Length: 112
Image (cartoon, rainbow, N blue to C red; front, side):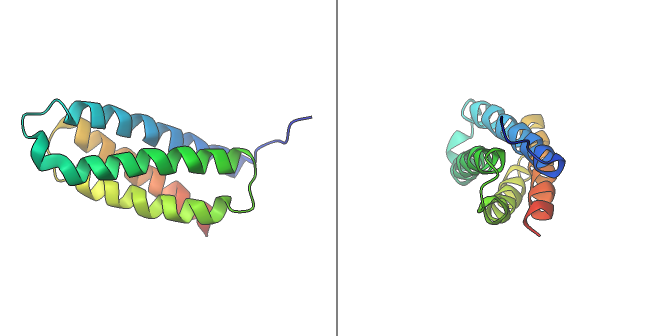
């Protein structure tokens, strides 16, 4: 019988998956922007955020002993990504910043 994921984990998993999707969409859109060369740091943060959200989701889904610690790192990376995305006025960057902040809040709550 599969192990049930707690409701708190599930909310954080959902936030991480939403963040991952938003970051992927933002990254794809940023690569099409005329000033793509100026977005290098933001793109690197997007990639980190995508990867940590995916990994955090996996750890929470399997009820890993390290899920809470990883969520703490995820919150830090999501906050940093939100800060970088917020510097650009494009709708995709602004939406991504909002979603990253929401994910960071869920992950921070999970970690504490």
